Image (cartoon, rainbow, N blue to C red; front, side, top):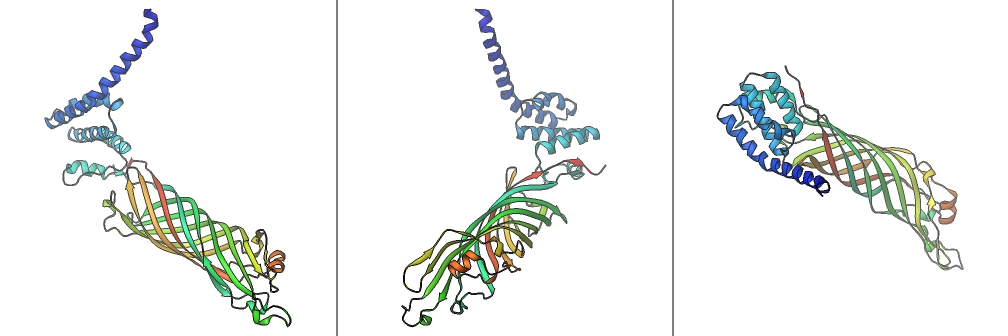
Length: 358
């Protein structure tokens, strides 16, 4: 019977020991604080060692390492002070001394360490409104000249971002690689009713369709932070301006939901989507400007921005394809694609605390 109960008794004993240690670690931290204040600095490490190994939560560990750093400074043990500072920064990457309260020696030692992130990486998603800007007219029948109209549509994008700070954190390089979609509605008159041949019903012929595209974007952007004091930005909304070039490689383009009214009134010519990737230039470029804000929440950065993406290149390589030209009398205008985008990002920072000044 005793043999059967032994494993359970051991489990209960181990659990009670763990609970007991968890319950005493806050008391241990209070004892360490009073020991530090009373000047018995040599006793401090032995008091907190057990809970540092297993027991302190993150906040308690941060306070304990801070006490150790200060005690080693006053005991003139610089190597141990450096080690404790590294442990403090590894425990709380975003730790900053309180300049109004913390000793000058502590602040001085902190300033000798690399405490800023090496870089940030993240993911982004966005919504875009697409608005083509025609730069020349193309048409099959003369009645189509100048009749093209465009309607915007909302599409999405998603990708990855990388950021690294320069110039005392005022300037950030922020390249992105993004998968994006774009679409818009087209409408045009193919034949005017006044041009119907004699003896035929004077019915106008209109074309309605939707152009859908997808591409990969590479945007080598930069950010300029508007905060007056970059060192005080943590925990606050951090406004920035963003800008730079954008390059995209067209993966696919299609002609969708085509509806062509017949001149004889027989109805509407409709059909499945048509692949028109061959009508588009594969590589295109644009200019991007915008503004946004960032907020650190615990160990994560939340970023939001709004941008205008102005197309600089004509997307169209050629105007005709057998399916769209003969079935729908369709010939796309030369155009640039402008976009207004709203983006949100989640970023994580990569830290590597290190003493920089001996």
